[in-house]
Image (cartoon, rainbow over all chains, first blue to last red; front, side, top):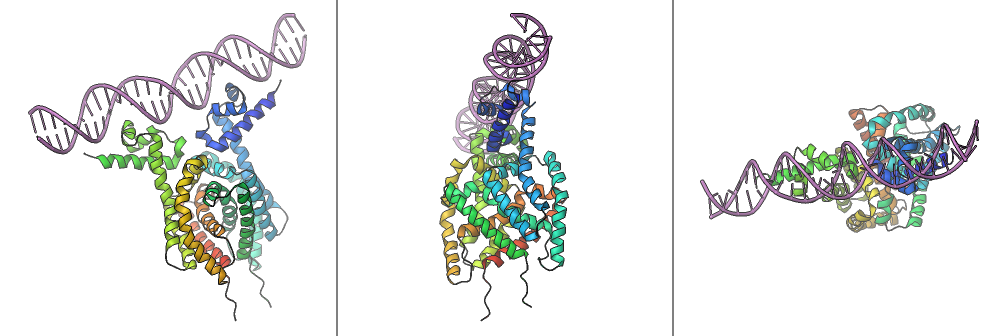
Length: 206
Length: 206
DNA sequence: ATATAGTTTAAACATTTGATTAAAACATTT
DNA sequence: AAATGTTTTAATCAAATGTTTAAACTATAT
């Protein structure tokens, strides 16, 4: 029992990097073992196959992808605070992991059947709280009548897309990493304001 | 010269389908020739290699991806009309080609260097007109002061993302194709209103 | 130190992959 | 009909891929 978990973690780390970079089909087992600096047979010693190793990485990424959102949706805070925090959290997550978004969406697109049940179980249940809060606010006339699906789409679209199109954006507008960060931060403020403005009905001066 | 363009077009058509479905790495030449119902050597007879065939398909898709936007940006119509039409056009395009978006963004992510120059030349020049129009409106106080990049990001994010996440959306909310269409149409109305509301400053009653 | 269990290695395996070949089938011109 | 150039086919190639094997190495317990 020399370096069990160390080696296993090295493989996992290399797999994360290579899979996120090249996708499942684009990454080869030799790519991964080279990145890890290990013999390629070890990959199958610790994980039984390329598919199993990938599944392990993918589940991790799916967790990262959704967990933040779920946590925030469950927080005991006001709807407005929740929306602001949701946007903020997603920006942080995707700034830290720029490839995460395209990776998850892409693998999901190529492999919908096997993966969809993982998401479904995690997601639907936790949206109920948020939905209640939203309906309440709509009933009170504080929020414009919209379905929750649309609200979540608004949030996800606007936070995720700038990171999805990072490569295009940077090249089109000739940005370096720093310029992109500034741009992303500006955009965050902008969409927060836009979404809040849109959803919340301004109090009528009585 | 029996069926030259017919065979070539069959290959192209099959390549479009398979590449959009599985990406460059995921698609095999035999997949494509099987889909086309042709001998696999023909692929290299008409297109010299898998890469060349892919490049041909990819350029087509890139064109589809950007051309509509560019055309609308150049139209001699008002800013507000332009934004409405831009959203409408993109919704049509991506509804017709649901995989287009994820395909382009994904290949762009895996292969940034070679492809970025194609985009740049096509995009930057044509955005100038729109930028002028936007600045003029901002000077007149009709439009909130925002950089064009943010405006375009808003438009692209909100139109493209629901098609990017189509698989997730459909499974999460248990939608069939028809339900998704309704949802997409509703969402289009919603984001059009939201973006217009946000950008255009309401006239102050004098 | 020796045996035992766990870990790592180099080499090889069977398939699959993109690509090529040389011959056959086809159409067109003479 | 013969000749010619074009298109299609089956068979094959070398390289790459995921995986397996059997031996070597390491650490720990007896």
